[in-house]
Image 1 (tube, rainbow, N blue to C red):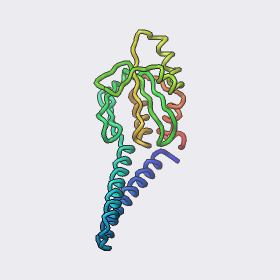
Image 2 (image 1 turned 30 degrees about the vertical axis):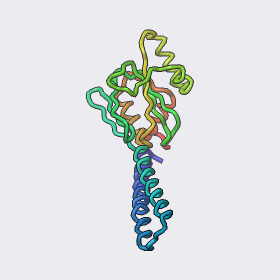
Image 3 (image 1 turned 90 degrees about the vertical axis):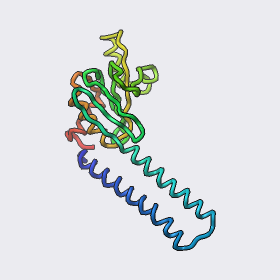
Image 4 (image 1 turned 45 degrees about the vertical axis):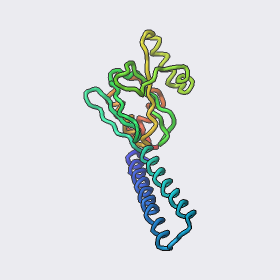
Length: 195
């Protein structure tokens, strides 16, 4: 399936989920009122269900939220509902790696500067163990420029929109190197291969 078709399908399923949750949110208390239920236990149970419906809607929105733009060599993105906007300079990106596939894909961006971005973390041994393919690329770059400090950021939220972000990163971060898994996912984003 092509990525644009998958995005439309995902949007349709997300809208169906929210419509169903809205109907449940309205119908359950309405039925309880019309049935004239006076048992306090059932009202507390209904209240707990309503809270769970709200939590599931917020969780779904948080998982699917990804806003990004690339203007004047600055890649700005916001991943999730409650995170702040991150800014990465496109010229300072040294490597891009992807882990996993489809909605679960993680985009790992490695850069040399920490430009007004508190989400960038220094590359450590934990990073090297968790992302061995990205670590290979990092070690190659570290041999060339050993005195430089490198940082990374992982983008986990955004579902299939991460493919569009990955394509945008590929268009704008021309100095970066890309791992084999990142190249495969870029081909999916550019509809050269199907999901």
